Length: 184
Image 1 (spheres, rainbow, N blue to C red):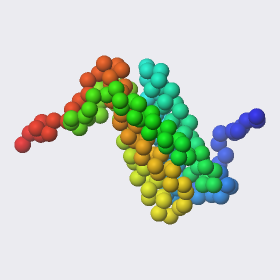
Image 2 (image 1 turned 180 degrees about the vertical axis):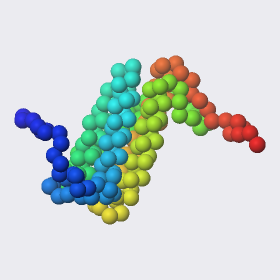
Image 3 (image 1 turned 30 degrees about the vertical axis):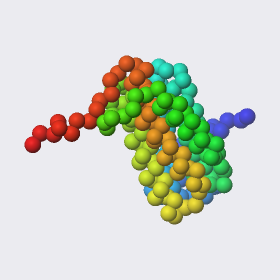
Image 4 (image 1 turned 120 degrees about the horizontal axis):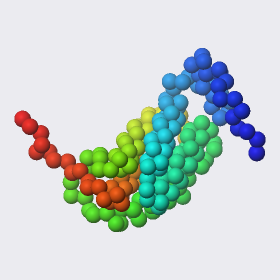
């Protein structure tokens, strides 16, 4: 296989547009380009989690999700290119259920924190929620597979559970929200 990117800068975006997979160009501030950028940001934050994760099982799951997110971004670039399928969502659900089995039931809201990796995973969850909002906005003006929205929605749940699992693996305590801490 040849090189995909032989030159990193092209100057084609200097006028405020960016190229899509089909050769068309869109304004860089369009909803579609924004959604693709948010998927990229989410993938980057997950890269931080993966790079600091000491649990091989969770690390492999998150690495697989990074590949899925790259495919999801590609699907937003080329809507006829379908990589995020019902099977990928089912896989997320199975992983989420399995990861959640070993965790104690929640009795309170949890603040983002604990260990560094878990805190970064909570950041990824928050970026995932923003990405979902961006994709929902995009769906009002651009048609793409509903599997994309379902995948991102399920992923935010998985990232919450993964952050709890990461705290458990590292022996960090979860930080429970204490509404009474608000001083009047």
